[in-house]
Image (tube, rainbow, N blue to C red; front, side):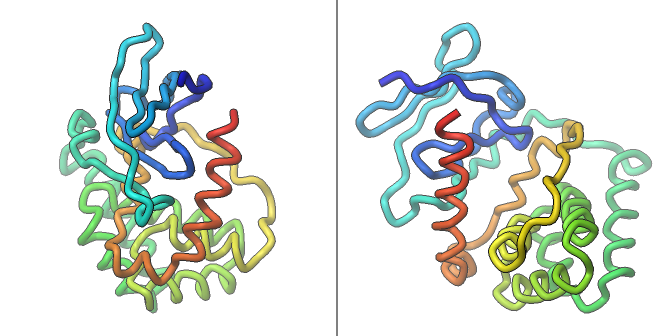
Amino acid sequence: MMGPVRVVGPDCTLTIEGTLYSVPAALAHQTVTVRLLSTTFEVLDKAGRVAFGRPYVAPKDKGKLQLDPRHYDAIPRGGENGSKGRARRVEEAFVERWPTLCELVAGIQRRMKSLAHVHFSALVRLADRWGPVAFLAAATRAQAHRSYSAHAVKRLLEREHPAPEPDPIAPLGAAARAALLLDDVDPGSLDAYGHLDDDDAAGSSAVVEKV
């Protein structure tokens, strides 16, 4: 059946039936229509053309981010003196501020590569929003469970502490459109946060799925 019109996130993701899927980067920020079929779904662009389609995930993977790295291939990469230089400075500043989170930093750098600075920027915003004590506790727990992503830290903070103020949405550049590459967590570490996936999936479904 034809689903409602909705907007693709700046990170090129869309929630379908409680599960977050990446879609081609060209669809970021665009209004699309989702066609829900019996075993698959299709994402239609503004012109009504099928821009992306795939089967639903298996029940065991419901609520877990479904990421296809190929969807981000079209995003340009900056030169050493441009975005790469800025990214390195962001990472260095984070390590200096939070020296006990070296393992988390290394894990993000290893998994996210050129998008690591997006995570560190997001982590800094989380620390500013929730305060250093709550942030460090959540980040340390994520680190202990080898859940190397800013999103995992945010979910822990949201679960354990009342959210202070709504986080303002800042304009994102091309590299940041891949921000939910943030959630590139291996299945083992994600199992440790199964209860968070349930909460996150329900929240995402309520906000995005029903728009």
